Length: 166
Image: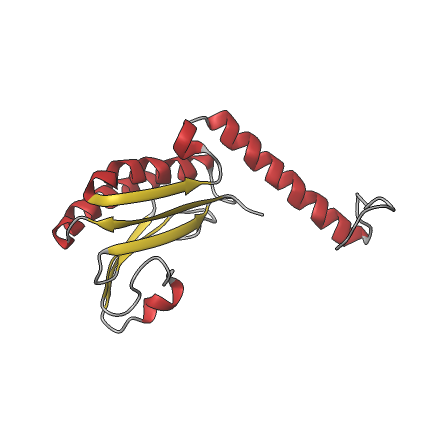
């Protein structure tokens, strides 16, 4: 259970990295976020990347964008094949940060041969802030229910006697 933005794609050319950095830096400054340049010749960062969607062997080049509060880092890190993949949980950060990630993905999309985005909050597809907020509130309510059940030792809902657990 969570609220994430998943994206993967192939950069047109490594010559686009400075332009990508400019866009990310602008968004980082506007959100008071931190942008980190990645130049990983050892491939240590590859342990944290999706090896099914990209070449995670060294060298890895790109950027890491860290929004606050409580947002997972946004990776724009590329293997030698110019591919990248990232899943960023935004459930516990601000709605503005979730929306900002969508806007920056839209802005950098022309730098990619293809960029695939799946937004569990639906904002990428609809730009409907009310829908995003409603989903986020629903997730928060579910988490609160689980926490309450754990704290008090009794679940709120039980399966019916004819419920098949197989």
